[in-house]
Length: 234
Picture 1 (cartoon, rainbow, N blue to C red):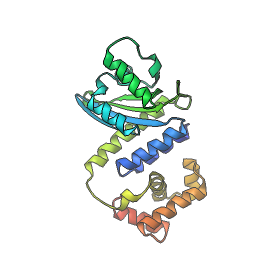
Picture 2: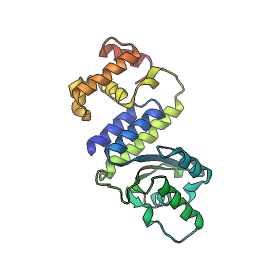
Picture 3: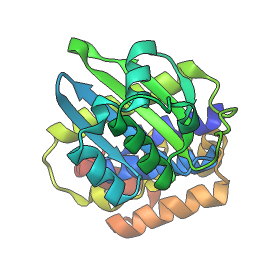
């Protein structure tokens, strides 16, 4: 599991836009047996989120301001530690709004999962959730809370850097894994060495580098690295 989290952190560091971070999270979620992911950043009344939940559920959640009553968000802010949850354990009694929230979440395939909350600066909170439609999610692959917290912080700070960057360049055409392999190449790592570090097969690493060369019109890997640096991709 450490290898999956390390790859998530590496792909996040190599990401040049939000789409690439979403791609990395999707790969990680599926590797851990989850169907969906959600990143949430709250600061006061401000809320920012991106996720892979069904679009109609995203619209309902934001329009209804469900973050106010979402038991996962409430529990995350209270505990500030990795925890698992299931919608079936949310109280049957209580407000009709909470019951409606639970029923709609389950209807949209969000029934159980694991959430990693991290306290940020100035009262802000970052949360990363992986969700499943199963009655109880298998969280056995997410036991290293220290590494999980590192991943949330990596995503948070990478998003801040991306938000502050307005330069438009060819970097946005690279996939998450192409960018990750390129980053290792800039550090002087060969395809076999990158394979050892990432857990990807050597020929697959070479495939990603070849695709990156094709997209950036580079003749060789050193040429690819030089173009990447010239375009501010690194």
